[in-house]
Image (tube, helix red, strand yellow):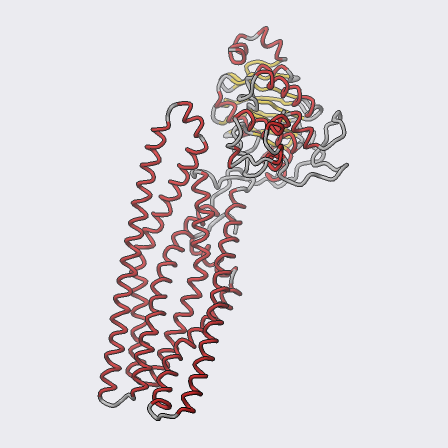
Length: 579
């Protein structure tokens, strides 16, 4: 499923189309089950008329054997049909989750705009599950239609008036059920929107828990979530009330319909138009119809919720990209020269900047917003409002975003660690065999596993040594079992281990002590020797090991030179870095 013009109806149609084999198999088996269910009361009526009333033991045994065979068929057809239905629903939800995650991870971005991470997670889980469940609802609806059709035919054979009541009354019930599902669809969509927002707020607060504690803002955060949760709860209760009203009214209508069939059948039996066995069959079929008609009510509710969720999924899948899609591949080998010309974005005010290939460059800022804007440009999360950014003389807008992500890695200071061990976070992919590397190896690195060298350079090996099971120790969700400084070292080791031709790191040592910071600075310089590396930071220890430093002041280049020269000659630089 790609981005573009996409509606909730398209999402539902593609979900069902992708599972057409499971839907067909489940529907066929379900129809066999419904056929058997409808024939049971008919067979019981036959047993009464031909065996019980006539006191024929042989026929009684024969028909009881037929009933036993019927129940065996019922059991297996239901089990296999339900299995096919559940499989279709789960596979559809899984496929949809992959499509959503693929869109969120698209190198062009855009899906996350205006949405908290928790909201996207809710769409990829709950909404995808509800859309997938439409496949099961569709199969159940087909089963119910088959049950009603078989019952109508059986009743027509028993009595034309009874059959006509079923044939004419069922479409009316379905139409009324559809009308009653409309309020549920609207309220279900509101419920999911509020629930997704609440999840997003919760995830946002948990991610910033330490900062909130440091600011003493826990109570304000709790109050914010309490308000959001109350709104979500109110929406959920409205949706539940709508569902209960819809289900209750449909059941009341269904009960009246069944009562009408029983009443007409009873009068026909009294005037001799029906035998005792036929009356039992007619009443049994009427009672059986309660199941398919209740299924119609459930199907309407599932379809209403599925349509609401499909609309939310469609919004994510159809979200426009944040950057235009370049067509040219990144030229190999990547030298790593970056150039900005007249770049305006946020706090950047027409900046001109040359970042030489193979050099360790430090960028200090007087305004953190300038650093954020620069990182977004270099990582091509956003294209400049004006001006251009070039890699080896080629504008980034002309390059394929996926290839660009491989050539230029921007390691944000607030990047997340994943659930798993420390080693899993540093090396998310399999370690290459000896003699093979991913990316270009620096010319002065000694032989040995690149992961070990990266961890040593970032001093993440010291973190591993302090943990109970070394690098195999789990770090918890988001790395919350680690301190802030430990997380930063693991994140830097991961960025170094990736080995991109161009590496941009942002404030990688703000939470470590000065001694460790100095050692990390030396390790970073040695590990990245000969490759383009940009460190966006105001840390004197990091800036001191760079080949060249640029000061961004008021959105423009304020000064350039070595760290020592700028400390000695530029007061603005001294204030930004040493204050």
